[in-house]
Image (cartoon, rainbow, N blue to C red; front, side):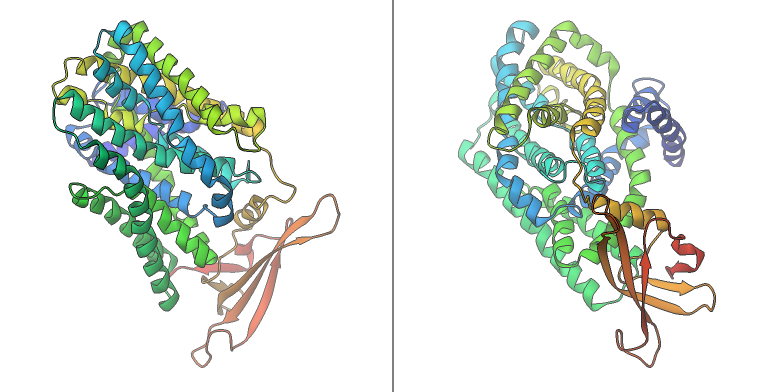
Length: 485
């Protein structure tokens, strides 16, 4: 397994860098690298690595969803709440319906098997979509209308909806008894319980962070451990009650950001560094799940079914945005963002075959083909269109992030040491302001209030001073250093 992890890094990083160099999403390179080294091609990844692949992919997905939660603001969610709920089910229903009609004559499978295939194809991939939306959110792209947040929230609920419908259809297909009412009621129940399952531990973690002066790495590990435990809890209680754990993961970050923004930013920064390795694991291992030989069997007929489903899905997505203030090109961007398929298709594509359906092998082949066709194309389309379509506000919040990252500034709660005398201070307040040096081009400035740590003084009662940083100033580490011990 150790060699497998090393291989993922050695192969994944150059693939990522190569695609980025040509202006393409690095995740496409990592997906293709995973296909090449996976068990269905060169076979360089050991069986032991593939057996734990699902766990590694889940942890990586948790990291990015936590980061997503730390970017979700209440005002943005209030603006996009209605459209997000509509987008979480309408596009998938259009795609399921289209595939159900097209697949029987083209693939020679029954109508109920076609419905199962439609459910598999109907799920958008959070593994592909969420990282790209996070990147746009961090840079302020589309922030005024909350477009990346809308897509992020809708795609997460979309998976819950589709998997529940798939469970019902598969139960009918294998001839088992299915309680339709309970299964359908499970959709809102799982969403509500999932959010509550994240808000409660998130609030408890926040109280711990406020009561105890923990170092940032410890806070990050506690949040990550809680999120992983939440996904474990989902599996434990699944036979009794449905819980959308991935929504709960985002809720953890949301409640901390809502109540203690400075702490949220510190944890988010640590998760961003952790994401470098988690991203490699996620996309290389998703690629390793793809059996190109099986996908080829789907052939031209499978491609037509997939494209027909995507056309119907696109119509459903466009209709879902009817009540928004999005422009035509912004709606088209949202349509493109809802194309990629990978995670869910790799996870449940083989279930009809395992259940003994006659068309199970065909369903698996089309599911795998959908990953090959839509994940790279969708990711590239999102990247290119997003850069051109998503607008930036006059005073985008990401200007402060750029300033903070460029100068290496600390966050509230972190300790800093002055290089000249070794004195340790603690950042106790932070303010983001705009300097009206020129009306057309306001300049961002970050002001830090710091307290000189001393055993005799209580926080905030001893000596304090203010530091101001703007564009063109020296980097923070020239005169100071952040203390992590």
